[in-house]
Image (cartoon, rainbow, N blue to C red):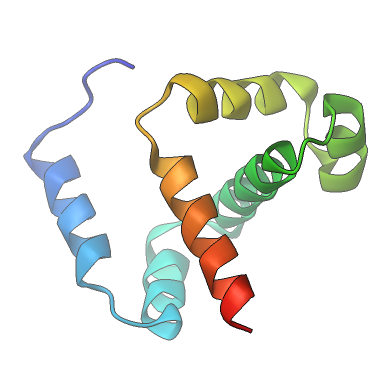
Length: 99
């Protein structure tokens, strides 16, 4: 991925790391993002979870309402990215197992 980091981007990452609850995260996202941006990110996470379950692109596209091009991008990030999706998927699975 291209280098996008700057002082502002680093500050944004730090801001996310300072949030302590889902309510705080929700409030920050609602303030900093549009509803469409939040929904798009949620769709990408849903897509990553379904890819992790072994679902195919066509079923994901129908279920999530996302293009196969976006599914392909999420898949590339899972397989060749920085590991962010894997970290979140593993932690979400661990949370589900606790319930």
